[in-house]
Length: 431
Image 1 (cartoon, rainbow, N blue to C red):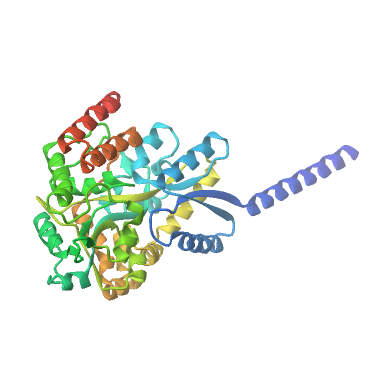
Image 2 (cartoon, one colour):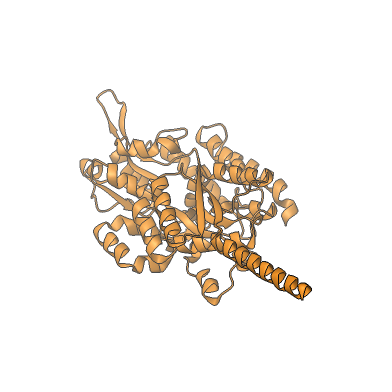
């Protein structure tokens, strides 16, 4: 009888312990660390903080810590350093073009390996196909579009009126950009330029601007497998010659390089009548421009064209099943049509899925502020941003070549030919 009582008591204690364990597990929070780049334009930290707070309010069992870093490169470096140090983040927004490097380092997991339900699988196909070109490879989805953009043309309508140009007809071709740019240049009595016609940035992300020009000249920069570049193709050389000619030949743009980081301020201070820049600057320009401005698609040569740009969500491989489930839940929350619409209105970045533009809020916003639809409409002419294996090194080769041509160190043909030879050496083993 004593043994029977012992067994009964032991069983009761075990059951109680198991119950307590399950209760503790039910209440234990899943903690997520998310690295996020903020030095790329737009009022981002407050918007992201607000969205994350909304998520945690709806999901009290998940704690999200957003760690803000400088630009996309900073976010990638910090996130990968944390992984190597044994203090990994669970997810991050990083360059969409980092996909090959992240796969090669075995740092991320495909979303196809995380989703479980038909609804989740259908969600993977809700985004604009042009944005997914930098998110899919090898038949799997590795990145989910979030902070995405295209390059658009901002122009000062008051400057157009001042130059005798129609403020509702921005340049639609390369020839018109050069011709209108000449009329928009304004000089003082001593011949000093007070206002340039056009500025295209050539630091920071010169390869991105170049991708627009080459696409307009009907030339892509790489293949879909990420193991071949076409830097020295005739269409690419012609695009760089045109870019160089805007300053050297037409005199509508300063010769040499133009700073990415200060271009927006130059436009706001009316030092240039036209700038090419990310749609992610739209909300800031809207708030701060002290003049009538417009936004248009980039001009065409053989066709219209722009690369997509910006960041995707990635989930890191060194995560527990619970963390992956929580990370997926967060990403799905942030990419709901209503949230995507809110994000686009507050930042100027693209609504990454068509149904975001069907929400009443974004419909009303676009009706009142038509420039908000330009980047979306330009997706029809968009191509993937330059992305290859060894992306950082290949991208630097092209950046250096562009700057060498713009500063007169080498001719466009020489600079791009040398970059192509070096890129071939880097990528040969991936073919």
